[in-house]
Length: 283
Figure 1 (cartoon, rainbow, N blue to C red):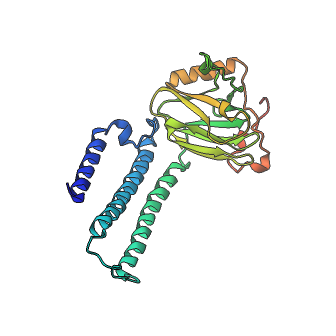
Figure 2 (figure 1 turned 180 degrees about the vertical axis):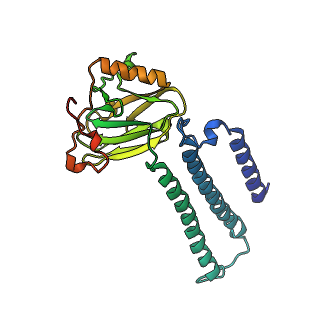
Figure 3 (figure 1 turned 60 degrees about the horizontal axis):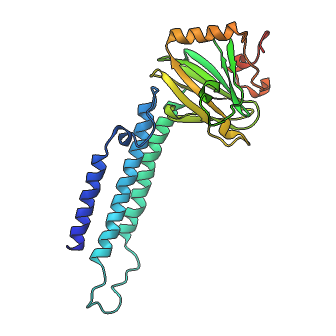
């Protein structure tokens, strides 16, 4: 079989393998199953970027293989092949095409990032997530109650999930997360939200999303924040509105009234974030 035949056969087999593995996981670029209203946008940007990268890679690899085959040294070759100092059309092509590719990728990235970080819509629920070494506190702002987590002890034995801090969210309600830190840089990450955002001391970060599926999802800190960074785990429980209201009532019954101090001074909180400061009666 000739080199050309081997190349065609290899390409056909590769395509067959890829197509045979087109599961849901493959279609979303091996990302976790998204559970928010933003999942489709994030997945499309991710898979589109990979498709473009693989197409460029296949073209480059194909040209390399073609050059190796078409211009391989033959037995009757004598001396060096014809030497060229430059090829203006090719050099222009290799400059313009990458610039065009970068511009297209930049456009879609900026478009989607602007949409994902937009907080102009009034949220139905506001949660102040407070990162601390090495656990989480959650202020349910509208309800005027809170939940305070303790550092998890990972023993490798069953029952650990029951000890994790739990953040409750109502399904199909727009939630704004206001992120603050008591100490060092943390990062709020729920893999099935398909996004994360740093929690910076002295700075208020925020984003909004709408959870669309009921369930329990794992969360963690995604920024190395000290010796017990790996212990900084939590759960997100997306529940019905009735179950969400019942959980808030339970917190109030436990005496968790008001909002926990997030450790930021008034000067560090931007206008519009003043409601995060502890009020009279807060703990």
